[in-house]
Length: 212
Image (cartoon, rainbow, N blue to C red; front, side, top):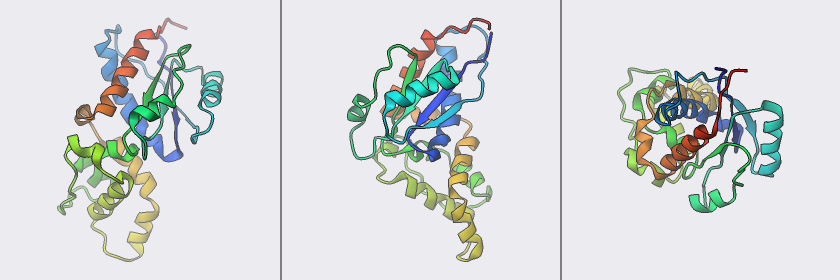
């Protein structure tokens, strides 16, 4: 059996932090849809659509990557998830799943205090980070700013040059948060995540990974 090929078609470059979430959910969904054997997963392709013509971007990654499944990401931000979902074509001719965090991607990373402390380079820090309860993540108004603040607090760095350097590295540290999270189970409390997981499961059911 050949590896499963996935491409993430995302809003922006920072949304590459979704890759570990997609990998984790793929392995869980693989078991749930009853696919045989262990999942062989190739490197996940990444393309930024930037809110431009999604159909054109979708066709481009199909031609370039030949993926089995395309995950199309849009942040809901100022509109409802339902409205944002209506803006994404169904792409019925190819397996796909829509990942639409309420507000933005960073909200789905605010579930693991240990991962945030590790990404901040201070795993043994003791300052309270005040993470929201999992069920309330979708009501956080500005998860990007909140996650950056948590990383700064977790670093324990005083004002000065080191903190300024730390702030320049925040985009990379946000990706590290995603890498350090061992389980995304808390996201099951979020309707937006459950809808993504359901769509990904249906896409997997359509995929045939014959050898070759």
